[in-house]
Amino acid sequence: MTQLPGSAANPRSALRGCFVTATDTGVGKTVLAAALVAALRARGVAVHARKPVVTGLDEGPPLDHELLAMVSGEPPESVSPARYGPAVSPHLAAALAGQELDVPALIADVRAAEAPVIVEGIGGLLVPLAEGWDVRRLARELGLGVVIAARPGLGTISHTLLTIEAARSAELDLRAVVLTPWPGDPDTIERSNRATIEHLGDVEVATLPVLEQLTASALAAAGAALPYERWLI
Image 1 (cartoon, rainbow, N blue to C red):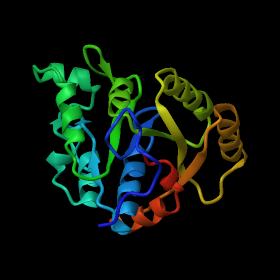
Image 2: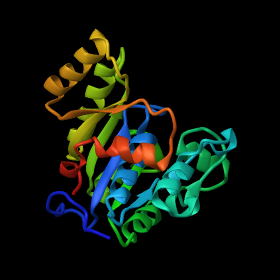
Image 3: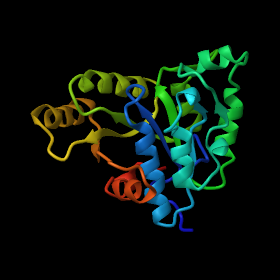
Image 4: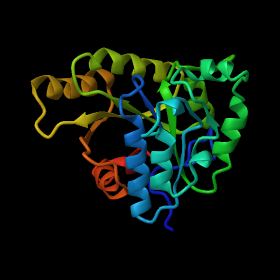
């Protein structure tokens, strides 16, 4: 396996890789994370996938951690050590199970990866995980570069700029925004949204196309078209 391309290591973290978050739930961050993992794997990079917490198992497939496991070649339970049935916020899912998420243990699990790691959050940056913990603090503790998945259509400018503001206020290392699913023939609003977010957010904005099938080869091809080398610490 080859070494991970990218910049020098973040001094806050011995980890290599990136953290994928989103403006909201259901925006496409799992597909983005899977595309990054698949593209790196296709190049022979020894990369792992981690989604520390997953909820909504009761909803049935497709399940986020199973897609990530498929492209990384890992067991789904290794990708997501904390798994809950109800499709609710993780702090509530844990409470309904009579538990409290042990976030430091989840961080230790990510850090134990012996190769570069693509970490996917759950929901947006301010989603609560446990007392004193939200996704933003999880990302900060891991010290990875952050990539934001966002919708391309109406409403995305405010949601995305708010997420950018939340990331920078916590001194996260924001690397890029990815609009997904990006249509083959974007309309005026979508093209304007991309340019506006890039300008007002002072951030690189890339796109991930619509994928008809979430196969390893399709995800790898989509991920390979992203400028991900400069996103990875």
